[in-house]
Length: 317
Image (cartoon, rainbow, N blue to C red):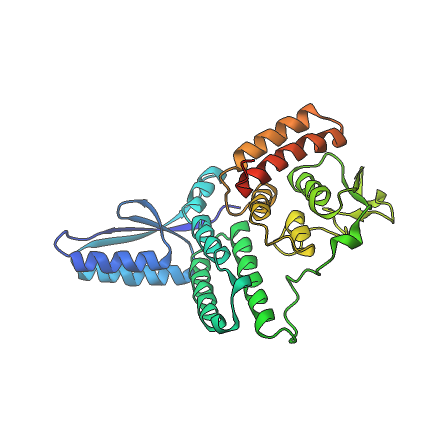
């Protein structure tokens, strides 16, 4: 769907540096996209037009010129180019990195007041980014979940006996209760199913037997289904199945698994870009073409995930 845009064309005398800075700050606070020097873009919304009109009056009063134009996207390519000017993925990436760097698991009770202030600051940062995220996508979902997970973990430590919001809570399970089981997922697996199968066999159920379903309704009653609608383990909120399995079995303290989880998340549903994603996607695409047997495909991709895990663990042995 194509949308309408507001184009703001502004020019101020060089001598009016104060006015130029005031206008620039106002446009930055609005979250304008920049087409070129002096030409700014916003989605066509009444509140944006009103604000731009005020800026135009300020510019003209300062001896400059200002014009507000309306433009419709000619085609989807142009629409995509314009929307990309408002891509906030980089901002969300920095925010999620800040969240993940907080060592809340090792904090003492006397550190909690300081931590609460940090969380309040992070929540404000998120709100500022979200306010300018006119075309939200998976990156915002990831940041939302990361922040809510942090808040939930801290609240549990501060008040362990109090009930907490359940929309992103995942029941904690014990791997010993899920050993020597049959696990089932859809055939011709892609990144999330392959990575989840690897995680199951390496960290949850080493003797797991994986079966591949032509359709989810074929799942045997005794099997633990994963990564399909109605499965025992599947997407929850913004978490993909790999991340849900991590959370379910207490594997979120492993930084190497977290990095693999970020890779899987990006390749499966998008969101915050990951440097290694292009290489992993190319490898698995080639393997799916070469191995038409799903057991063989899993056996080969397990070697790739083993290598990523070792590299991310910093283990050179």
